[in-house]
Length: 160
Image 1 (tube, helix red, strand yellow):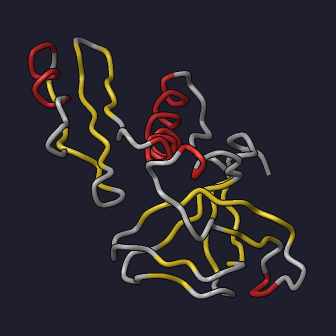
Image 2: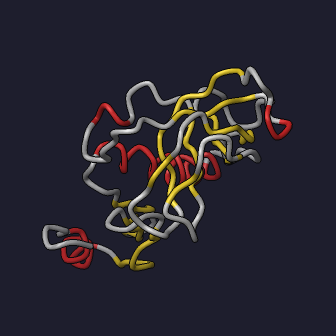
């Protein structure tokens, strides 16, 4: 979707683009299409954005093609350990870490931490991630103690 995105032109030579993009986060769009009878995904170039796009779009598609009924990672509600700021008003997912909640605030058994200094361009942003913390649209950030939904990367689909 940027100046250096060659996917649209390259895919146009051998297949067709089904949709322009699935915009889950500004400048981190996922593209998909069909080459013959084969589904094609174009993920962002930044390592953490690629991991998020794979977990949200590619992994569920692969599981569906394999015949699984459970497509999505298990989700849990968690209390934010620290304030989280985000650059845009859009909804996006940040790699994070879960730990048992000491206070069990908001009826949550988990506490979620998102690195303060994160860049989706750095592999370290995805390394060691146990969850994807959902940061909803309509806000420039969330305060510590707020309740968020987290997709568990450390649990298989259909796991409790």
